[in-house]
Image (tube, one colour):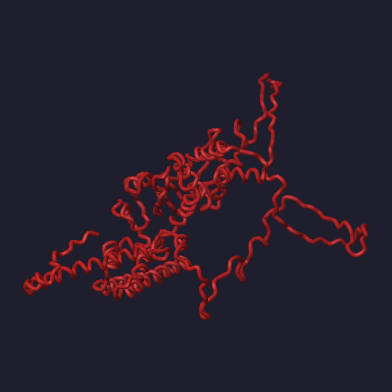
Length: 482
């Protein structure tokens, strides 16, 4: 901010010679600068005070603000839920694992009372314990010996075929390669930790070159179904979009995501510009684009947009913290309205009561209009920007009121990005553009398989096995295709 300070004499004698009108003008100029400075101080305080409740910053960033002293809980304050299963919760593990791989019958060896070793053959009872356990060697080393024989009919030499998951020239099976890729991009294990894992569970040494080649090989094998998913997304009625920074050899690039029911697509982008959005969705998108209020999304040709109300709520939470008069009350009023909107939309999702929702939506629009009119004249600079956005982009903030099938937030895209953000924090990004693109491809497969309840490890295994046989077209990430 550059404030133009008024030219005012600094000595008393010169000031006393000025006329009353000139002095009044000086005071007014100083007042204008003072108000400008106060507004700037409030803006900077707002930036400093931002946390996960008032911005898009992750909860982990709040750690530095936490007190080192134990907070005394008031008697009226309800106790927080303890970790683990809650009272009345129907457990899953105790229902069994759905299969038994091996039975082991354990006979008594000696009587603890008398030391006897002979037991009656009749009157035996069983106590059953179903336990999931690691086998002695979870990874086995197999030597496949392909026998070549001469055909008795035509004389051609024929070799025995390797199993589908065993690829000639590769030291690791397709399934083990899929597991290592999953550990690297979902479990965030570095190549060094993957080496340790292989030694811990199989007592085998595998070089980092082999592990890097494995990651590259799996990513290449999944390119065809990943690209098909992107083309399919462009035809969908709605899509969630978001982006997050990603370091490539120390330079900030951008990881983009498109998400929806049953899929997540990641794109390695050089910029945070409109060009990346157009590369993802085309020059225009015929559906509803759900996103935050970042400028790139504004003006992009779509049939409609829904801005994320969760972001808007955080902005008003920030207004609540401002010290200027009436800003706290203004922020609380609009936070209450947004909470009401979230509550009613949740009720519609749970009940499907369209009549009630339509009645509420009509009255809610009037409440929003009245609230803007009520607070407009009392809004500070930060709140005024939000109210102006609510006025000028009402059709984008409140699109879900007339189309409840469209969610009022961008949580689906943000949840999809969390895995990528965690990987970026653990790994520090990528060393090269090829590594960045590879991560985007593998994250697409992992998050899409998770969304569809499929095994990403199995998908990677099949991609490798089918790829070497020229049958990659048999794999698909499109929801409902497999």
